Length: 164
Image 1: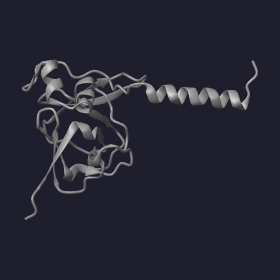
Image 2 (image 1 turned 90 degrees about the horizontal axis):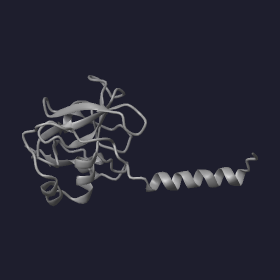
Image 3 (image 1 turned 180 degrees about the vertical axis):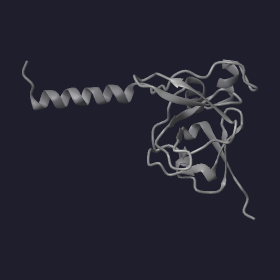
Image 4 (image 1 turned 60 degrees about the vertical axis):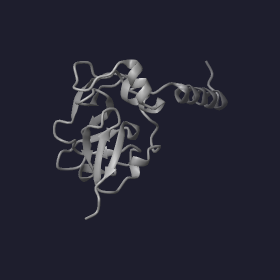
């Protein structure tokens, strides 16, 4: 079999096009009994299409698309599904990954589970109150925890703290 530069470039372009069209899915949404629960129909009615895709289908928004990635004000980040306080601006840091990143959640606000989707093993982060998918946690964050909670901006709402 002979490889040509044009053939290799064409195959690469085809793979890139297929990857861009493929829906990005992180895995499954947490199962179990949560203090806040709704039927799938109710979730669809109360969330936007993008929120539903991330929160209820464990999807991932495209990098650098969330305005919350650049949010610098003091405040609290809430789960877009149930309004649970999940992260504060005190633990937010610039990771350069294109998603809002935090080194720690609000105590007891999130749960984690193993996610073996996309041919890799990761730790998925979900809201402890409604089970909605928020993102993933990695071991390459800053002190004091060394963790990077890489969270979809569409999974969050932000409330700034009023200036004193």
